[in-house]
Image (tube, rainbow, N blue to C red; front, top):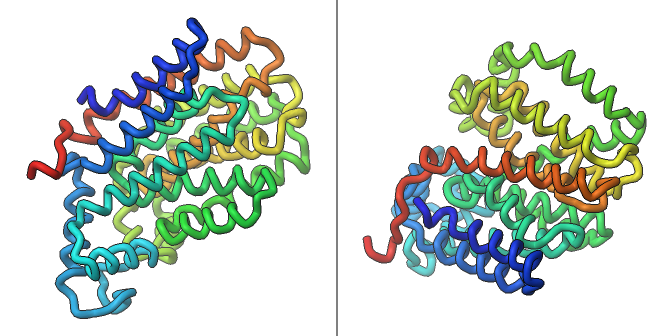
Length: 351
């Protein structure tokens, strides 16, 4: 299993050597990213989704129907994914090439995100993105790529790069429709800026709503999920997490919130939006224990925790160091699931 952690080891080595010996950490960042690209591209049957993609590829190859395969009930997926399968069929490529495609774009998105966050070490932001997006990078590749694309699109939009933002968002939407949920943090961002809630108010909100974690919300959201896609009906009442998943993240969010500078509205627009994403994530985990697709959505918005790595959001160096320590403890917590998510690594070239 050690191979899954090597990108993290490379990145953290670069970060530490930069701080201790003033060695440029960019080389380690690029090395970690390149190593990630190679090992994900060459992965074999290390997870169940591997066989799912193989089955979908076989269906496309075996059918006489043309793209977008609208009459085939087994191929009710986003058009971008179906188009990719159609290209594979046309050029008679092995289905494994799909992992090369998604790994390449995921690596590019991670690179662009890390480069855009100038107030964070590129190696630190890489480790965070890799930890939070581990399932998406290794297993649920469409979901993972769309999540990273969503974050990059938001960054571009806030930086007034609207054309880039639009095309990255469109690409992500064609990859997985989960990016439509960006409206949730947008809503909370508007509310946060309109009413200028204090940290103490947010604390009491969580205190009041926390008992709802014991309630089963599945029955209320079943029709909504089926409206988007019939496949989502299978995600209802499927155990995705636990009540502790919510409480761990609630405590983490509130702890980090009280460590940052006193006034939330002194933060940059990007920081405030990332805060809205993190806030959305905690609320989603409140109702996610019986709804798998919501659990995944909560993981998407965990990308908002990036704001707690931004030096600009802290009033003192001590608070920033404490923040980094707590976030790395959270990252270690996320990696505890790795042995249950993927099997020992092997490449498809030797199958």
